[in-house]
Every structure is written in structure tokens, then in C-alpha cells.
Length: 195
Image 1 (spheres, helix red, strand yellow):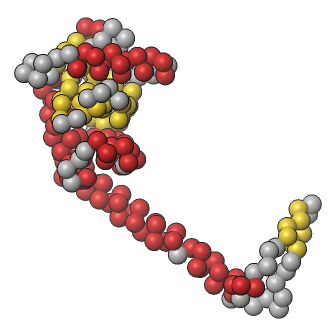
Image 2: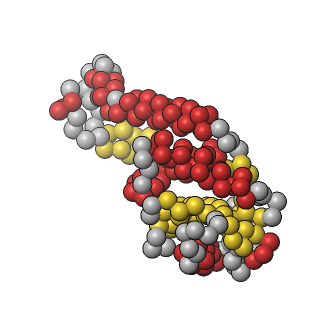
Image 3: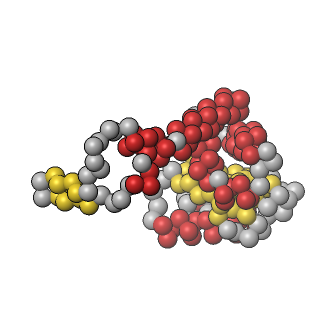
């Protein structure tokens, strides 16, 4: 099972942190720092697997990572997961999906589009279990979500105009100045500019 997914830059600044096991926030921050120091001191030509740090379970857990440009993608997994399978999950499912969705993903995409990054991650992994490994299926779900967001934004952007036209079409002989509902007294502002 996947215990945590961490993405941080070359300076150790976390860009994505997702724990699938409950830890207090202070411990989470220590885990991120410890993981960064463990991964940073490794040479580029050494394999991408190492034992988990002392805070996250030691020898019972493995850190599997990939380094792309300025970002480290680190998955902390227990001994039941395949190292090569997780390495493939990082490369094929997660990073290439990010790359396809953001067109050459970079650190700024992770910063400014955090909601989409989390959505993509949730399409791949949920609750520490791998849900989907087919990149085309993941991208199709992301595109469907994007279409839904666009249609919602168009509908919401038209809402003020619809509200003004609804007020105009109310055919009230006079616009009420005070509305009393029980103990509630509402003063209505002057709406003559809309009529």
C-alpha cells in the first residue's frame, strides 16, 4: 500500500504532500524534511529505491523516487508493493499524465494548479491504493472534468444578468423599499439604475 506521496523541488520545498496514513502535522513536516535529505544525498546514477526513513517506518517501508528537472516525485510504500511497478506508476501514470494535461509540466503548474494536480492524483491513487494505470482513461476523466468546469463557469457568469432581467420582469407596480419577514426587517437599496 502507498503510505505517502511527496513532490518537492531541489531545495526541499514541498509542492505536493499526500499522506494515506494519519500523522500529526509536525511529524509530516519532519517526514518531508527527512525524505528530502535521504533522496538529495543520493547520486543520480544510483537506483531509485531506498529504505524508508526512521519516522515513516524504517526497513518495513521503501522510498521510490524519480527526479525530473527541478522536482522529486517520491512514493513511500510498504513491502507489499513492487518497486518497479511504483516506478512505472510515477513515470507513466502520474508524471506523463501531468505532462499531457499541462503541456510540459513544470514546478509552477504544481503551484498554480494545485486543485487539478490533486484531481489527477486522485484519479491514479486513492486511499493508498492504485485506481487507474491507463493514462488515456485518466486524461479522458480530466478532460470531462474540465468540460464540466467550463460549462459551470459559463452558467455562473450569466447568473447576474439573469437575476437583473428577472427583477425587471417582475412587473411590480412599485419596487418595495422594506421587506418585513417576522422579526427580520430588510432595507432594499435603490434599484432604479437597473430598471
